[in-house]
Length: 339
Image (cartoon, rainbow, N blue to C red; front, top):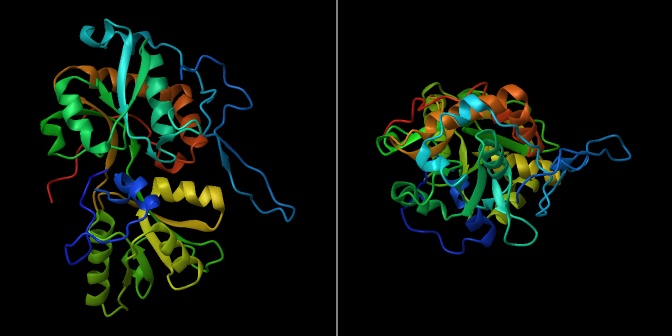
């Protein structure tokens, strides 16, 4: 996603930002092992059970190093598109930022990256007849790493922008979505457009794309005589959770991927609305590579093979991200314009 600075509305960095927030900064600010075993009953990264009352219980995601990923077969046509410079060592070096589940996070051994982005990278490499070499990378470091040739691709929740397209090529693999989440017992069931947020108390990250969208919706509402939004800002995730669960806030609004993971694991919140990350424009998350090196076309073909044979859908489902699935990968799709 589009990276922005973590600042308060006055422009100063807020003090006391907790570890939980720091770990998900790359997502909260948006514009943000070799799988040889066959898929088995343990291949899904999340299991669903029900409680004694019949209600859905929390999902348990597999965050161990032993992932038992869905294997992907080679697509010869896609593999033929891989540039020789990348193909020659038989490996695809992919940068990921393992700091925010379910996209990418360190496993329980504190050293093995796991998550949706890792699974997609591994499956893509297999489809292209290569072996994925996953390299943990700070999110801010991927542009230089790609430009220098250190990384042949990046799968790290990167949003396509017109500015980035000047230096990089892209093959899309997820829609960039923002989610409205309410307390599980809340009477709020649907947020689709500006009138739905009128008068609501909404937690949002300061200086983020989601705040910008909410501010525009609020202006629309006030111009129509509707009640204004009460914007709420918190320094850490714990304070935000407490405000929502105690009834001091009605909704949170932020990147859907991490919020969906939280909702699935603790069952304390529910999704009530999805918004395109570039509203009113669509925003795409894409595999990123150096401009003009030819790999993006191979990645697009490989991703479309994974979509067509069902592997892609299984991966997104296992990490709870089916709502962000794309029908097909696009080569250098329209990017978000400069703000």
